[in-house]
Length: 287
Ligand code: PAF
Image (cartoon, helix red, strand yellow):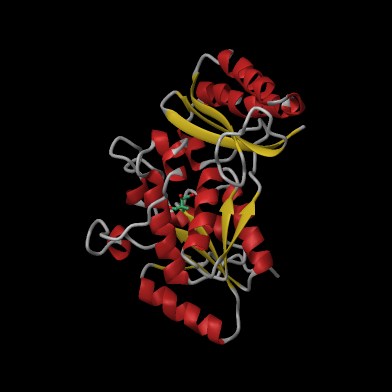
């Protein structure tokens, strides 16, 4: 019978480490699913994957102040640990690691931080200065705390995934990064904790984002100009959607594709719908 008890919560690094030391001593492999909470089915897909590839699954729930700009939604970001634990019940999670900000940053802002480099300043990083340094620093800390064999991330945050994979390689961190496909709602919108900010009208308008990616996919065999025109055609008709960027990049470098690019390419989109900023992505194959 499936155990439907919500998973245990560890709020201290010491508590989590002693639990993990015991598991590792017993020969268990460990997977980490890093999250900021407000869990939805997209997160549960990451957890299901983690459970398939490791014996012990740790889900971290931490809204990381370092990755939010001063004018961003750190204060209003949804936080409900009870609901998160309930959502994880029956999913085979060993423990939730939910530290307070003081536990992760006991001396205030860290002196040593991970730099996301040039790619960290593109796309999301251009609109959200310092965001990826904050993401990489907290992910490096989480990997140091948990020392998982595997860490699982969602494809939707494609630039984050690229940068985490690069960090792990550059810093010789012994964790394998695995990526799980984006989960979409019935209307095509990628699941995101920030979808909760959308009222009904903006939710309807936000459908233009996955529709633009679908249009890009349909135009993929006609080259980059056709892809951009197809996506823009959809977005221009969406009055409530303010495009931040639409870009098509090489998956191996995250640089814009050349005009004559053939093969895999990743379409990236970020747009503001009302006051909510959403991102999405799709892997294309340029013929
Ligand atoms: O993708 C997220 O939820 C966050 O950026 C992460 C990876 C948990 C780091 O805070």
